[in-house]
Length: 114
Length: 109
Image (cartoon, rainbow over all chains, first blue to last red):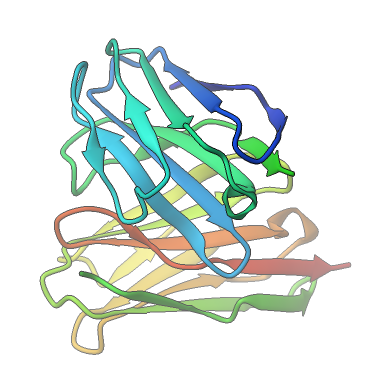
């Protein structure tokens, strides 16, 4: 079974601080994604990547950066965290073409920005 | 881009009853459709992937119906049981995947 591991599972940050969320996948999938999940909004795409070295903006990229240093790792970076970024963040990897692939999700990171 | 509306946001049924969750979408070029299940405290897991050529898809204890004319996708859990209590998300893909807002299903004994 595909494995996507996120760290940390929970994070409390201060406003204006830098936050890095990490994601590791052992499936050798090319595509990786970062979503945030908020009540009433479902899953919204922040950034995604087609492979090592690539990052693309999703639907809500403002205030976030992404880094894909290797096939396995995809990080989400909040340079200046704000309370509006309090949310649950999910990383996912994809096993096929961009439009028709099954997504494998990590267990999520609950971020609170105070 | 694609817009996906999922209804209802909350659904409570008794054990043995059916539960129906519906998504409507806007892009007529959508070709792939998905249902994901998220149990409490867990990550999303794929329930079913549907191709546009198939209108009726049977799973274990559920049926997924696709009506391309009305641009509607529905998940019907037949004879729901408490273990079905979870959040369910539809996803629609014309060129990439767009998620609905989710339905929180509670199945009471």
